[in-house]
Length: 206
View 1 (cartoon, helix red, strand yellow):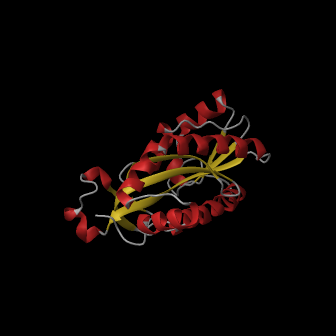
View 2 (cartoon, helix red, strand yellow):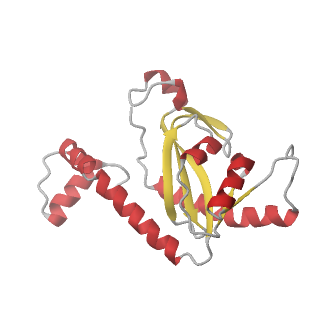
View 3 (cartoon, one colour):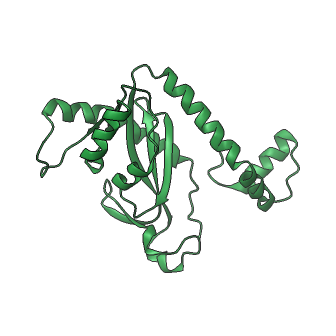
């Protein structure tokens, strides 16, 4: 609610809830101590949302989390290394930082995620994720997730159908109806990304 401003968050907790937090450094340590609890809550909620998702349609995509502007990469103190330099295809620009790989329901509710360095390709990240979806689910993704081997494994062992967009160079292209269906379901996840990043700090942390 405070866009990453921990000082304002401390003032709010003190004035509205009576928490005596000396400074934002202590508040930051408190957040780290409950990080496992937050993760557990997320996955408990995701299990509920998957149970309520009778449509059994899910979307996979990623969005970048830059830690600094490109011109300041050499001075970055938060992260260092070539593995953090990634490419944002939707904006056609490079960034330096992390990438969040997200699976959501068709309504855009996140139910699983993986955070990697910015250079990790979406297809690689998908193989690293434990795709735990209900049987007979449909998982939609863009052309970056084309992986025939994983598609066959998901269908055979989890009865999950991986539906991806296709490239011009793809041999087995989707029909027009399949492409339209893919775009229809994937559009909601962009709104989810906007809602998440809207809450991010407005200044880069060096």
